[in-house]
Amino acid sequence: MKINENFLKIQSSYLFSNIAKKVNAYVAANPDKPIIRLGIGDVTRPLADECITAMHKAVDHMADEKTFMGYPPEYGHSWLITAINENDYKSRGVELDNSEIFVSDGAKSDCGNIGDIFSLDNRVAVCDPVYPVYVDTNVMMGRSKDMLYMPCTAENGFLPQIPTEKADIIYLCFPNNPTGMAITKDELKKWVDYANANGSVILFDSAYEAFITEDNVPHSIYEIEGAKTCAIEFRSFSKTAGFTGVRCGYTVVPHDLKVDGVELNALWARRQATKFNGVSYITQRAAAACYTDAGKQQIRDTIAYYQKNAKVIYDGLKSCGFTVYGAVNSPYVWLKTPDGMKSWDFFDLLLENIQVVGTPGEGFGPSGEGYFRLTSFGSAENTAKAVERIKNYFGK
Ligand code: MLT
Image (cartoon, rainbow, N blue to C red; front, side, top):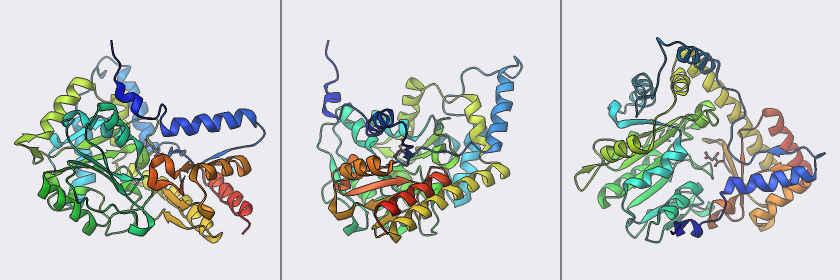
């Protein structure tokens, strides 16, 4: 009997679990000091009324033998897939077939699981700093070649440079987690051209697209010509519609995307049918409700609420001398720690002195050292309070 020793090559606990442990220990030791959590990107606003109504109705369907449902269709109910296709793609000029859309329990799982369909012999390229799921899942699987880290720093505007050596699988997340920076259509086109020229596959995580405010920033990689032959896209209802606790997302694998004549769509379909049993009917009804006129408006209102928080953090930090990035097309604010402080030291300083929790940039990779991430997903009240505490502490 042997374990998968690849698990010994990664940190024993996931970044956000680590932070939660540290914070919980602090809270237990200091029960009189209220904490403000702006660390993990977890939402705080309740679900849209439309979603709640749809879920209640769906529960009633499950209570009646005439409308009860057992296993859901393995790739999602057709009414949800059609709503996704029409609202998220057709409306932006992207033509997809419904069979190219796979509903799932979220982008994190799909980003982690997609590696199943690729050989272990591929070279993976990731941004640095990076959402840790991309790196950890490849190490867990035993992807054999050294990973290519593409530094994203203030010097390059937090945009990865096209690698000079060949990358087979390229993870791109835009608007970016953790830096909150976006990519323009022109810049993304360069990646699509690189991937098509080199036979690489881009894994495009678009979980934060609902926060885009600028017109030259693409919501989907398929807005870029040529992307269907080189890219898989991951989307999530988590940040768009507050589904972090409900769990629903989807992945697009175009039929035109082929490696050595094999459609990746067929491999992903096979993988999902074997290892995944679909998303609950109740959840899918909630997801479909996001696309009604009222649902769209309610979701937009919630996004606007978080966008306002992002601006409060961004402006507040700037006014007291911090160098800040992100926020404009993203719920994340990425700041430079003062006086070159290490990001975990800054984490401890904020926790111990003003009880504000953020995420140390170094937790996302070596190029995140010296940076720190705050999220706009808290309540407006707590966000304003956290900014006040920071302003008071840093003396301006
Ligand atoms: C984050 O804080 O980076 C995200 O909430 C993590 C996730 O979406 O899994």
